[in-house]
Image 1 (cartoon, rainbow, N blue to C red):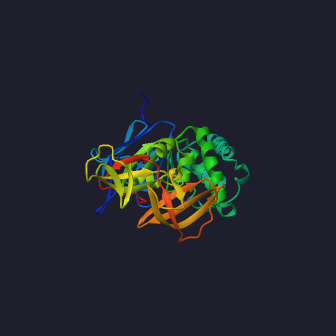
Image 2: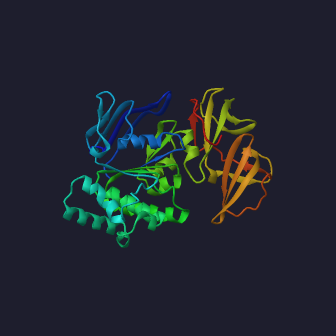
Image 3: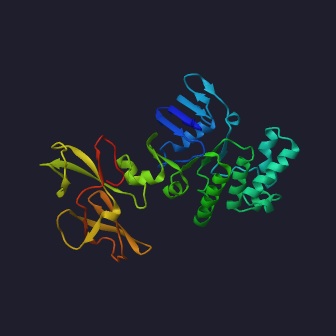
Length: 361
């Protein structure tokens, strides 16, 4: 088997009494585009900073290219410049007194490249990012999207084995974000560098990633290709966090061989013990809108009806539980309207109630 480009073992990072990263294990294959996805405060940026060498792990080990670059047990801490990794910051972090050319050339000067090699490499990455006409301008004279291209070019210039991206598109408007996503994919194909990308935007994650690591409270809940994350979410949190719209996970209890949610008889419990609690996953596209009460129909209050390319996404409330349905027509309803949502004969899957919380329930 091919050795992982990045190996993380039992990685912990504690700030005071807070475990920002709590026992992360991760293998990133060579050439992969891994996206660390999760809500604010889940630890994804801390993991990236640990990989970059900007933070020292409390315990655990990081290997890049087969070499240990950080180890709590061994006391190893290779500085950022010695890791063969390039970091693209959210804020671009360009030198304001240097031209585009100067910004891109600077890390090559620090690495003591010859003038001829520096010149050739700068021209190469200027061409790769399609910013040749900006080489003589200063950061204040170019747009945000152009500044981000320069920041990426500067990171690529020393030919790092690993590229690290800290929410690089968050400062761009919606149109530029779409354009830069396509640009990042093109750059990834052209360079073949192993990439780790942090975002809380799942559209970015699903568009860019070969692998997604969904994080929550300092831990990784699931690592898989995007299609697998959507098709078979491993936990209630993943099911309710990933997807547009995400899945509905409802708390159910077994009574007389059937799953019940409040007063709604949902489905046969399939041998699950009497009184046992489970989380049941219902996909939005499997839920129908009904005019009247009936079996497996839940009375809800409409919060929002969002038209979406000939379909409508309905967000509703049943008590304190949010339920989302997708219907294949345009529905015009006022917020506050009472509806009945019809659930399918059986949930898409069920999860043991191990104390974890689902985002939509």
